[in-house]
Length: 79
Image (cartoon, rainbow, N blue to C red; front, side, top):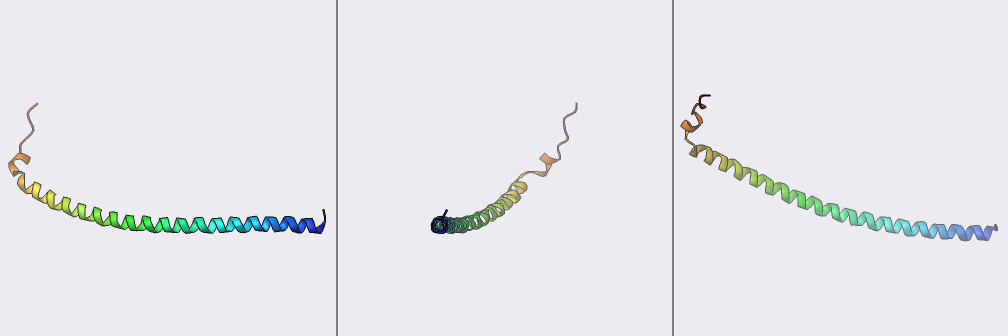
C-alpha cells in the first residue's frame, strides 16, 4: 500500500469522523432544547400541583367541619 493510498484512506476516515461529529452536535442541540421544554413543563406542573394541594387542604377542613362529632363517636356494633 503506497503512502498516497494511506493518505486517501485517512482523509476519507477524517471526513466520516467530521460528519459524525457534526451529527452528534446537532443531536445534542436537539436534546438540550428538549430538556429545556421538559424543565418548563415540570415547573408548570409543580406549580399546578401545589395549587391543587392547597385547594384540597381547604376542602378537607370544610368537610371535616361539616361532619358532626357524634358520628365519629358512635361505638361499633356489638358482635
